[in-house]
Image (cartoon, rainbow, N blue to C red; front, side, top):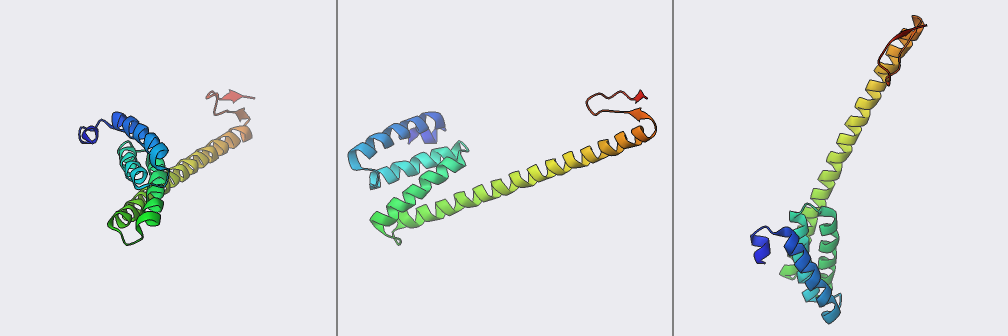
Length: 139
């Protein structure tokens, strides 16, 4: 936990993964110990901006908490709230990426259209032009 407070995320990531592996062998994959350590690892992953991997871990945590503690337990409710926040973040990030990709594609299409129009005008006037070769040649 000290590593988290000192923002030594790489060390914390490595430590929690080792602990998680040992706990899975000792207690089984569906234990509270595994869920608690998975939650800590997921928190580290969020701090490292590895949101998708954290999401997967939080889903597992919630599944274990529900199975062992029930839906009304504070740990289950907390995990559910955290998972919803992570999913919202992923959705917002995906939406932003989609908007950026769409805008880039539209800019690219617009630039291609302008280039095509320019090339057609030059061809009609007996000249040629290529976007790869910026010189204009007479026919």
